[in-house]
Amino acid sequence: MQEIHHFFHSLFSLTLDFRVRLFNILALEGTVISLIMIFLIVFPAMFFSSSGYHGGMPAFFVFAIIFTVLMLEKTRALIVSLLELVLYIEM
Image 1: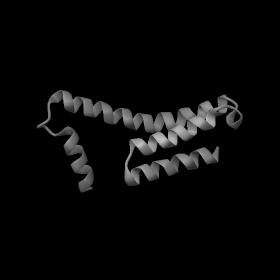
Image 2 (image 1 turned 180 degrees about the horizontal axis):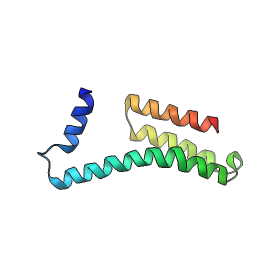
Image 3 (image 1 turned 90 degrees about the horizontal axis):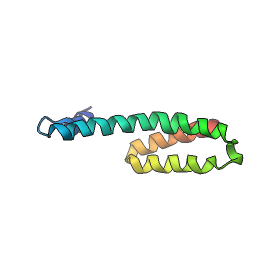
Image 4 (image 1 turned 45 degrees about the horizontal axis):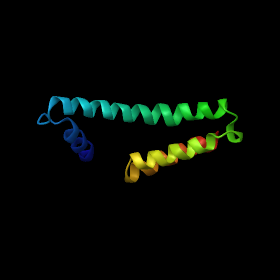
């Protein structure tokens, strides 16, 4: 809980310029939407609409997992990547 408080305080502290805080809000929102929408919904939909494993979609799934690892750190990267792998394997 303390880690979450420190994270939000560093991004949205009142000592930061208003534009910096606004940018941080937009960046955080964009990251959350990207993780949910792109990698967990859009890529699987594209997979089924483009011939699945017989098309070029496996390359996009590898890209999605690698991008997630590069975007997140440590335990979060591991957990989200494992969730993506499970979702992709279940298809």
